Image (cartoon, rainbow, N blue to C red; front, side):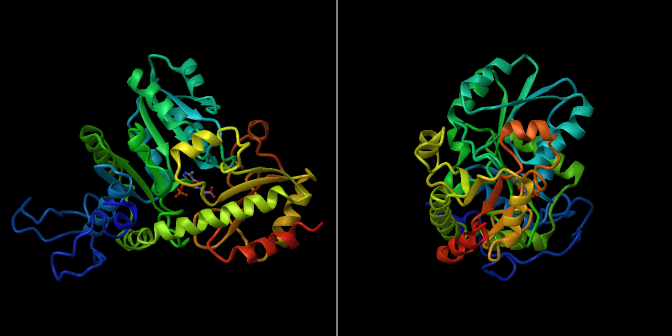
Length: 380
Ligand code: P1T
């Protein structure tokens, strides 16, 4: 099945009870049992719920994986992966990543005795220098949040395989419409389904997809034992959202490209970070592993002050100043003070997250209106 068809039908069958085309919202915590342990496959909704199950099958289908798991947030999904580790294990992670992921790694799991190496992976081979006998997990984002760095998934997968290290990738920015990392050798794909998969800024959710049955068993065990599941209403909303993922992504990519090019020609703009540019450091990798370049664009201003950046944010009218991304509406954020505020200033700045960095989640509105909005906001 090709992608557009899978987004609509993947893992979905008419419901058994009344053949409803959309899975019903099974708003129940528990299920009647004929005798202790004798039931129809569902005993308690932390463990299994039919609406969540339908969504988990859809996640697996979209990512060309065998097993899908849905969580109460993207961070809960990442947390489940980290629970595979033990004290003294080591993790190699991209240095540029979502601030909340960094916070989970450094403020929580570091205290449980796990060591994190944050590495610039633009030269993917360089991570081999950090591999030790204790390395158990490689964690990457590509494109990264918010600098839009691109990491060569196949090169990292080869290194991970060579050293028998688990390789997980946060595919939130790209979505399975643009890249399917399991096909390129990753072991775990993770999503903040809050973003493009949900697509309408109305739900918080996380996802994991894997191929290996033993790994899936361990993750299902953690999902049930720790209990960070999503509710059936949210599962329904995300199921509905992913039916339009392909068409939304096409428009996100079209608008993202138009806006990146517009910003690159603006006299008040200094640098534009978007993997579609020929001069992006890993443009060739992006071109080979992604179908298109997505709807996320970051840029800095010629005037490097915090005040000027805030003025631009306040001037925008169609772009809404808000955390998050990936919804149909365009959002704008200030990573240094919002999404990446938990990264120490010195570390942030060394990654390029300076005070004048602005991040756009380009929505699916008419691009002319978006450009007009930027034009008036950048007029200072
Ligand atoms: O918010 P939550 O669903 O828990 O997902 C966390 C997360 C994980 N990975 C990436 C790449 C993310 O961007 C996020 C959440 N990001 C934002 C809220 C943001 O504005 O960047």
